[in-house]
Length: 363
Ligand SMILES: Nc1nc2c(ncn2[C@@H]2O[C@H](COP(=O)(O)OP(=O)(O)OP(=O)(O)O)[C@@H](O)[C@H]2O)c(=O)[nH]1
Image (cartoon, rainbow, N blue to C red; front, side, top):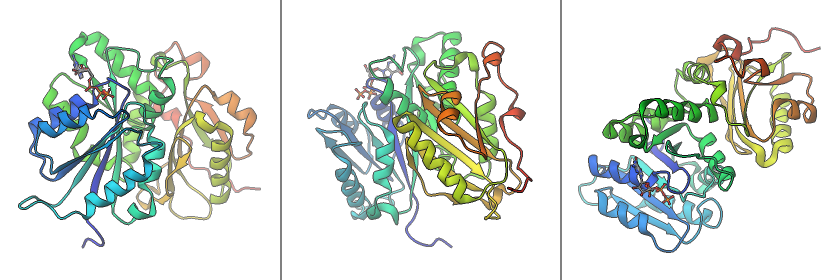
């Protein structure tokens, strides 16, 4: 029996300027009848061209424009109001209940503040199931120094990275682009392929895209798989993927203060944290995630009682050694996913990517 309002999938579609967000959304609206979907378009300028293209493309039940500002900074309260209005609005005659909202962000938006806005008390009871999807332009350097910070924030926040413009590349170059995208964010699922119809619906409407992987019972498998696909040789020089191990048993207060210290030490350089940890004072492991320095609500995960600890941290311009020296901690040990000796020699064995559940008592 469902308690409370029905689940509405909220897809934050991000990706740097020109990486193919609008084209993806327009293609989706052309190929599917999406009367259960609303679209919100945020454009940093006044012109509203993307909004017009999208409104023309299909039959989403409503298209709303947040223009002349960026949804992650100046328009944060407008986003909350717009989403609340969409959820409260009576449905058009004959339209099914609203199941999905897709927010196309401006190319310069960062997902962290948007996710924080969606956690606003005005929306927190609305049962939004949020998923970040980011486009990755296979034909060029997505992390050019002019756009590095925003693009890094977008790609590392994503549960799904959609490889766009594959038609411009041969098979080998496309594979390289997929590996580069995976190495930026081993926690993301890479959506790629030459069949546009499949790509578009896998990117934006498949069940997987909606759940974001965070509450799926195969979360562990997904994470192990993603990390095992990590190609060290494709790693970006400024993006550091690390794993942390719990050296001795730890309680929740110790672990959460480590998370706070991590955010404090890294500041803007912290891009993503995903952790499933066993703590002494809870029988269930706890899942906690951040996008940027914004942590979501920790959640008990009873279905993962047998899982090992999984703690993955992604930063920019700060490596594990830098962090270890600034964040000394007796119980948590951070290591780079790529040992210096492994950089040239391929994929680390997935069995080494996780710490076993500690059985030590803390002294
Ligand atoms: N060849 C090719 N071109 C594409 C593809 N996707 C997008 N483009 C082109 O890339 C340019 C930018 O695409 P958009 O969809 O507007 O990109 P965007 O991310 O919405 O851009 P902003 O709104 O500026 O952030 C347009 O000229 C598109 O036609 C693709 O899959 N293949």
